[in-house]
Length: 65
Image 1 (cartoon, rainbow, N blue to C red):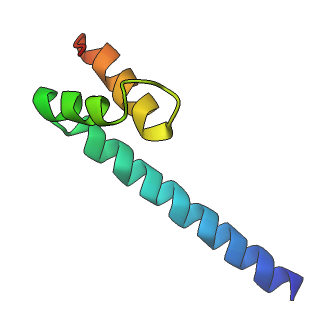
Image 2: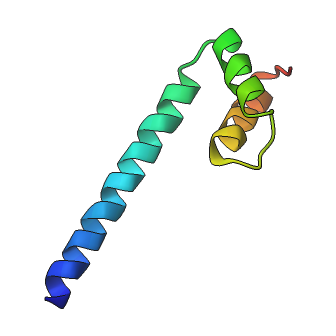
């Protein structure tokens, strides 16, 4: 039973990591205007994970609200 639970938890962790990577790739693929819109929605703060990713990408591109 413990092995089954550990396998399930490992699988869930892998799926979560894949989803996060897909979300990050989607944000990185946004155009400047869409990235600014996303940052505006999340308040251009790093308080939330999506906001933090958006702020980091804006910094990398040298753009700001």
